[in-house]
Image (cartoon, rainbow, N blue to C red; front, side, top):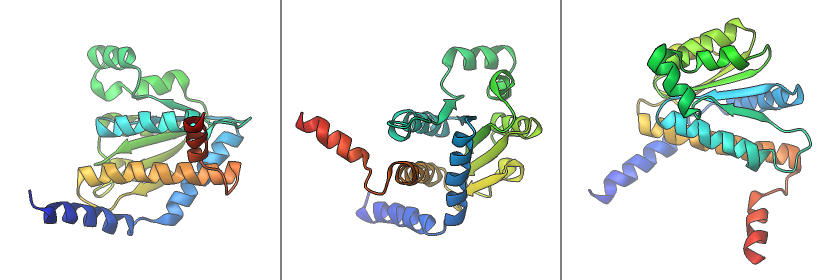
Amino acid sequence: MKNSEFRTYFSRVSETLNKLDIQTIENFVELLLQTRDQEKNIFIFGNGGSAATASHVTGDFLKGISYGLDKRFRVICLSDNVSGLTAISNDLGYDEIFVEQLKSYLQQDDLVIGISGSGNSANVVKAMEYAGMQGAKTIALCGYKGGRIRELADLVVHVPINDMEITEDIHVIIFHAVKQALNKKLKGESYSMGDIYDARVKE
């Protein structure tokens, strides 16, 4: 593989980042803060790479963002319960794996975040539809043309490119940018998780 192919990929990532709607991401941050202030739950989920992103983000909220706060974010990843996921998919069908969990946990004004590169993953669509009907707030993270979840969500964070890998890359970048923005808002401009890591290394 020639170096130019790598440069082309990285250039496409950069070009797509520059096309993101920053105001939408700022609105995303504000909605997360509102949900925390109301002491409501945040549910996040997706399939494949998006499931990995959902799990990663949940870990970031649990420690990286909520660390040191008296009032914490309550983030639950619906992609992580393997026994529950396999039981539901085996007995009821794969399209039911997220909505069945929401039926057990979801309350009005909770926040539901569905991640789907295409925006058309049937289990994500079904969960978003249910969440909306139950009075929850919904956020869609998608790529391509946005798919069905773009039509369903209260807030849409759209990555405008027809490429699954770059869409997934940028979803992680968005969440990390949101993480840093939340830390600055809640812990001050000088706050950095790097300070914690640096201190640990010196011990």
